[in-house]
Image 1 (cartoon, protein in one colour):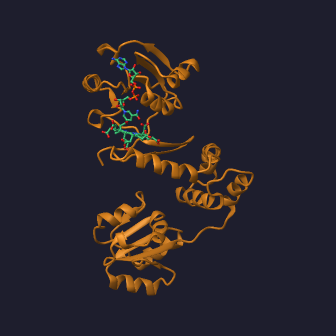
Image 2 (tube, helix red, strand yellow):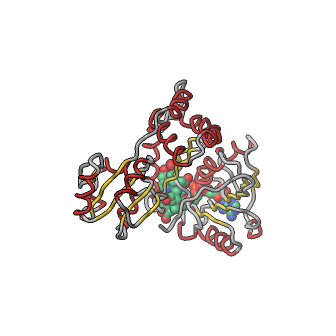
Image 3 (cartoon, helix red, strand yellow):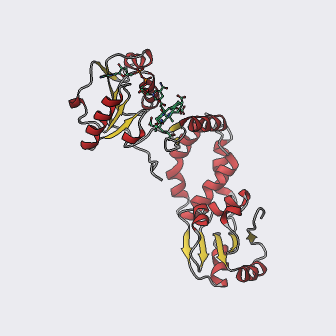
Length: 303
Ligand SMILES: C[C@@]1(CC(=O)O)c2cc3[nH]c(cc4nc(cc5[nH]c(cc(n2)[C@H]1CCC(=O)O)[C@@](C)(CC(=O)O)[C@@H]5CCC(=O)O)C(CC(=O)O)=C4CCC(=O)O)c(CCC(=O)O)c3CC(=O)O
Ligand SMILES: NC(=O)C1=CN([C@@H]2O[C@H](COP(=O)(O)OP(=O)(O)OC[C@H]3O[C@@H](n4cnc5c(N)ncnc54)[C@H](O)[C@@H]3O)[C@@H](O)[C@H]2O)C=CC1
């Protein structure tokens, strides 16, 4: 992973864009939605950039850029059509520890711009590490049509209720179960039923734990897609051997890990409502599937 995705707080972030052509205006379409202070320096500006000036969203200086301009910014975008100039300014920015993006030159980028699906609090960023921006754009259009715009107020609604849920359900695990129930009932819609789904998620009866069994002979990449929701819900993973890397990638990252499990301990965890995975030799998995007939035994291509 050469490029690591992270989400930057744009409040009081100082951003400079050099160049005000088509590409600069595309970056501005995204940046203008943030809280950042944006300044543009360009000899000439296209109409789209001027529109942001007229809306007072940016400040603009129409002139040649100079080396002293690359000072005192958090982020700098270089979008002039002059390759040598962009490279020189990018090198200066790097020397001054300013994060820099050169629109047509990943080699000189400290960070790159992803394709973004903007649903308010929900932000999805897609990158191909520069390999195929058009693929990123097309994946974005598919996700855009899949995620309704009403998901924006849904996440505002949820954010306002986080502390209510924390107070009403003091145990961490109960809160997770609560949110899982809520999203199952409500899906990604926000409508008149959403408050009912919210209340109903508190009152549903306590869910039972779940045991998932996987034997060491089964390769992670051959597991069916239907197995993924089980792997993503796990509270505890029991295994006396190291997990193969590919399997580990599929498991819920913050699940607890334990090496040895007694039958008694496993039963207790299930009674406590935990989702458990046991990864062990086929003989041990055979034994456990007799002992816990309700367990889901993962197989290649099917459950
Ligand atoms: C490395 C990166 C640096 C950066 O700009 O941050 C970069 C670099 C380059 N882009 C080039 C070309 C094009 N870029 C687009 C579109 C987008 N490019 C974006 C990001 C990025 N572009 C970063 C990597 C992102 C990633 O990880 O995938 C998006 C996501 C965001 C945005 O720009 O706002 C936005 C889609 C937004 C959306 O719609 O969702 C299109 C298509 C179009 O215009 O519709 C074309 C023409 C087709 C083509 O050439 O592929 C070229 C060749 C220039 C040349 O040949 O002259 C280079 C340089 C090179 O490849 O060396
Ligand atoms: N148009 C596109 O879809 C893509 C373009 N690119 C590349 O991105 C770069 C920018 O593209 P466009 O926005 O289309 O170019 P453009 O020519 O429309 O805009 C360049 C901007 O930089 C300014 N500028 C140039 N020299 C300057 C200087 N010395 N001081 C201050 N401002 C200066 C110009 O006044 C103008 O505002 C180009 O290198 C292009 O090859 C890369 C990917 C896609």
